[in-house]
Length: 125
Length: 108
Image 1 (cartoon, each protein chain N blue to C red):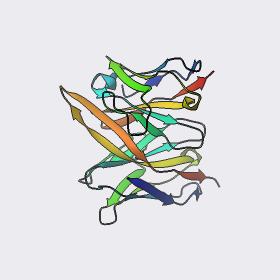
Image 2 (cartoon, one colour):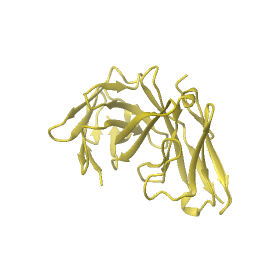
Image 3 (cartoon, helix red, strand yellow):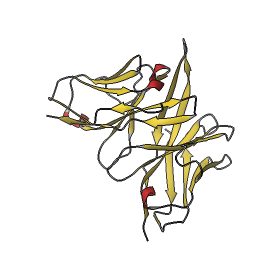
Image 4 (cartoon, one colour):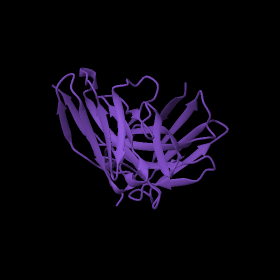
């Protein structure tokens, strides 16, 4: 059974850089996309970005200039880096495994079937 | 546009059927996925693809789609189904992934 274990600094000051890492245990790393999603306190889910098997990335346009997702296939890990954080970046950050593709006749699917437990990040001076 | 719209809150009597809907242009070409989130827990996938339930998800959960609207139906709602539910899709034109705003389900 695939498990995602995530870690990283939970308390940051404004303007610092958020760095989180997610390790994949018990399943294939190379055949999936991997993504990061966050949830501000009391609010809904926000997709941050994803990285594919080839290392290609897609990011939420609202964060594109500040966010970087990378991966280390030798360790089955992927990471999130968010620069210049503010209080608005406070929340729970989740790493997820993504399955995506197309079904006949021509309908796409996209889902996150494995989630990490979440890392609480607080940005405060 | 790259948005998914959900009703903020829905209530259902214990044992009855409830439908939670999600609207968005991307759903004309994407199956929505659905997630259940209980307080203090990470979201859990309950429906993916056309109408697929991951292992461990009860058969009372089902999904459907028509035009720009996807629906999550819970038949014979149980008290433990009280949670927030989010739909999720992708917009290929801008490589953007989106969530609906979430629906808080209350079981009466």
